[in-house]
Image (cartoon, rainbow, N blue to C red; front, side):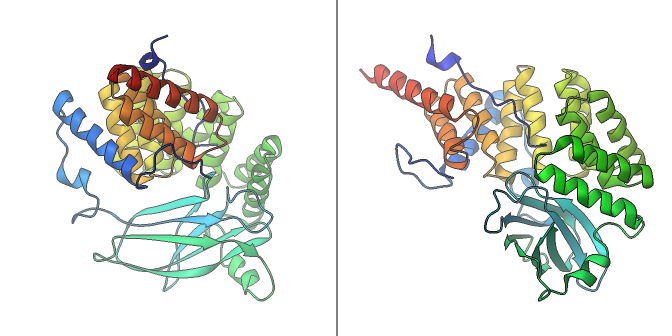
Length: 362
């Protein structure tokens, strides 16, 4: 078999750890290789990037707060942790849940002081004050979950609103129970609580989006689309709902609708790395390699620790006949996810690519 014609692909989605490297290199080398891919794609593909697209630190870029929550002792992950962003003067700005690696992102912020806090059943992160301004455009926080104890004034804090003030307490409690169930991989139980939450308060945007994503992971695509359509009626500019719908259409192989929905989502939130990654998968599956490379490169710019983006980046480099670059990306995947579903295949492909390169030199 021709080594360069057998890229691997991860079937997992971001909706739902280190190996020793064969050759030591700076941690950011992978991003540098993706920058090389940008150059290759711009020259060969005829694409022109605006300056602000290439350098998020330039004036006009969004102000944002990103971070990662580390699990408490005894926990396996910090997934589905509720992260709240409030104005320092008071008032909820936005609320999100962490991904499988405990990461979160709040973007398109105005200058000012904010308070970031987090909570999961039985655990809490003490509030952190963050100053966002034109000199500190990006703020990255490393937060630690700790057991919730009376030493933290958490009971009153939680009653100030774990969710939007318009959400009834009963719906809010069902949402918390759903998160707890999903964190324990109890999908059916999580769906039941989410269904109760939206039956109590149909305009519960966050619950509708999470219900749609959970339906999708359970293979109930029709129900997933219904829930996400309701979410978009609640907030027609919800990038999260649009990205989830784009992923749904991708799974249905309705690539034109997927592309349209994802491009619309990125108009509202250009820094939504999941949107870029999903769009990259759409282009990969439709054999538009130049466009796929551009989107995966942007994904890695926004979230360099997302393993699956490096995996697909390696596949793209293989397709483009750039084996050295592909090796770097596959090694990054293994560094970030040494126990990943496709880690054995990635390691095997690295070895094949190295043998192929060695044969060329002989």
